[in-house]
Image 1 (cartoon, one colour):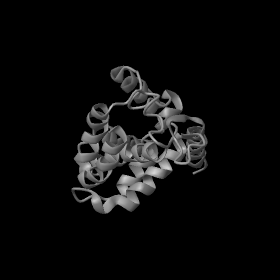
Image 2: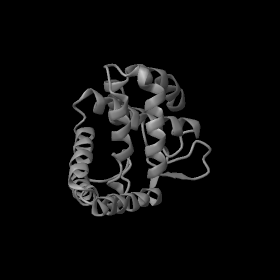
Image 3: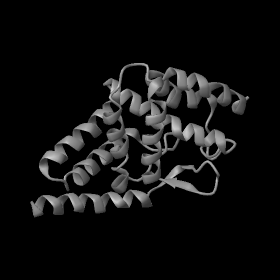
Length: 190
């Protein structure tokens, strides 16, 4: 039992590093960039609050689990903003290697379970993962809207780019949420 607990604690200590990964998005008060640990917590809260707007039935417990671990690979891979300049295929390979490493710290049964949830989130094919992916995209939009565009000017984000990189994913899992945000987005870009 001690070896199991030691492995679990090693994973949790590694997960603490997520608090040191700075993201491209700022806090809603513009005081600083958020870290990936804060982001994971915040989108889990977003999912709890906004679950009623999922366009298909979801298991909120599974969604929250996905959201809490979805960015853990950033410990090794760093944050790669959706509007940033990076090679998606190269990042996918780096993130998969990070998932192998980080989830591999856990006891085998938990490693398998967590990795399966992470893979499900990444594939975004189940109702739970589609909704989780949409909520992951909503929170930075809200933050940018609350901060007068936030980092959109820094990344030269256009309305079309926002629609194709973010809107499509949000509409897939929670179209009512995108519709509600779209008026504010159009006003900002207008």
